[in-house]
Length: 585
Image (cartoon, helix red, strand yellow):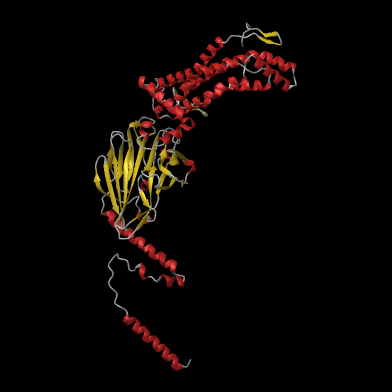
């Protein structure tokens, strides 16, 4: 390129720069605090071609969020904090806050804490950003709904209405009401679209947080989810704290919540197909008593809201005892009680009815347990008698069986054949002693479950030192700690151990003493009176009361049956081998 061409190129460049600067429109003054850009002014496609699109886009989104937060902060400063909104009836006292439009505390005046020092505070959340009934929009996390201050548009002793409008045009209203004598709230959540375009929205709502750890802090403490399995039945999905975090995406989830041994907190939508999933997550709590605290969130399915339209979702929020009378206030919650009773739930329900019937006559659940135990033993006495009779007959035949074993020593097949002939000749069935016992086992297990989990046992007194049938009897405090047993002296398990030892001595021996296997079984049976008191030492006193009473009645049954059994003259091949006058050992 020659010098003239180069000079012309430079002059053209200077002229272009001059016109570029002089032709620019004058910039408008920027108000203080306003953003100096718009998202539309960014040529994203051009930036992407030069590899700058992602960084600039992120910067734009960050400035948008920052702007929204500034607007929200301004709105929040205009709304006064109201963190002691009281809703109560004759069975429940609750405190609400407009920060998150959520529940702060639940007190059940009818019940007391295990130490009986104060009324029971069923919910005491430590996380202010996850209070029960606080919400979060899934797609719009920047609005901080869980701590956002709602406007209180109506407030009374049994109803409060919160509302807030978001920057995206969605207005959220929570209408919470309480009826007299009920352990639940009626909750109506309305999502209103104030824009002229369709909106897709989904949200999560906290169902439980800060549940009181009843009894020994962890007994029965878990998150629960009800799942509709058809034919009007609900299955309970039970998640212990040690298994959290956990997400349940089962089809047909009907409710979510938390439970301890005697109380439950449940959030249940009016429509069964509204829940998409349930999540439960353990959280730290500064109070060491709540060391196993956790949060349960219900995630609703996404809904479409038409322009200027709204969607209303109705819920029932239950907070109360796991008693039939309370759980039946809300449809479907009896499944919680069925889960606690297990496979013997049908028998357990009958036993609880009988227990309450006795309590109606004599208002003492300890006495009711005694009467229930006597009734069960009377009903099962025919089976018990048949079992005991068979065992006595087997004991009478033991000398002859021993002779057969000696005669056919080394020939087990021959011994077995001769034994069967002997049993058939004298009408003795070896299984007749076990079969009646097996028939009684479901009843015994049901009794065990009933007395272990029934709410009726909670803080129910019996006699002077037994003040709570749901705890060990605690006769007096020891000045030292016994390993595995603790620092209390419990008398009922020891009485039960003595009664078990007497029962073992009275039980007929149905096997020959020279059999090594039989001797081993006898030694194991002799150890049971020592093992059972240790196992049941710290069990609820209602259980040990039942077991002790049942064992004592069994002793009386054995004495009665042994006296009523007629001794037999037993013949073998025409010769009398056992004299009926001989003493039965």
